[in-house]
Length: 370
Figure 1: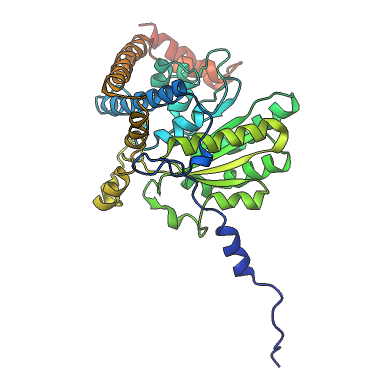
Figure 2 (figure 1 turned 90 degrees about the vertical axis):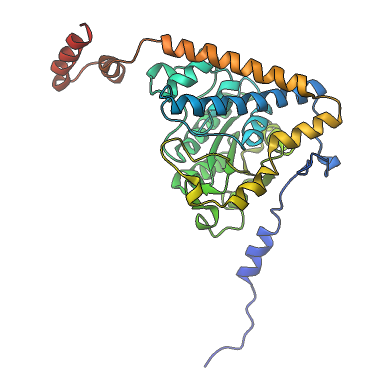
């Protein structure tokens, strides 16, 4: 006989109640108007100008890198246009002593953290020198394995905590990366040990060609923080001020011993997933591209700064020319760097060469000497 007893709980209602708390945090609307005055970060006019300079520089770097890739002068490259607010504004909230643990699309952040531009180009070419960070530059090489950087970040953050450092480790992945086991392991480990980590998911709508709604049944990615017992926030990833404020808050809490934060930045990549043959026209519509172009982070921030008399065409052109000149110099340094040899690979891989490779090593060494 079926029971008529009313259930004392409603699991679906509980889920929806949690999801409803994850509303998008925004400070600037698409027209560059302040819509959340109370959330405005404490940031100087000079820093606002510097942030805009870095975003413009990064857009030019992306355009030039795509051209260099098509010329055969760069190897692997993942375009960044559209994600400047998500990447550069989040990095702008960091300090020099913090660690940046990037994914393969996050080369701009490690450049602004101190990696020479010429080494970034060498990384793209697969040269081992591209992975050798200068002393005092706290970055790891861009991670190619999807989501693996989340586990690395949890470990680095715990190390910072155990050493009593007032610093954080920040990492980035895409919406596709949030489907990986390493994503969950990383945020869970960091949460369990209250490690000073900032986990950023750049939700640019597509994991290569797989749309975000096929990645997870979750209404947001930010709500996944609940399962790890850590704060999570959904941010307008095309709004530099919102991204900066959210990251600054996460960093302040982390260095004060309050543990990690998961930040989902809602954004869009205007180009292909990588330059390795992806064709976004096969899975994105013209209407979608047009809609997101209206939300361009550079256009939005430019309007905001112009209204405050902090930005103009002259400043913009100075940033563009500076980027072009430094890119030209850096690619020349990369071109002049001796090409990587097979024997370099063997020497870097082994402290003591295995017997089965010693003979091959001598063969390649003789070839390379000619």
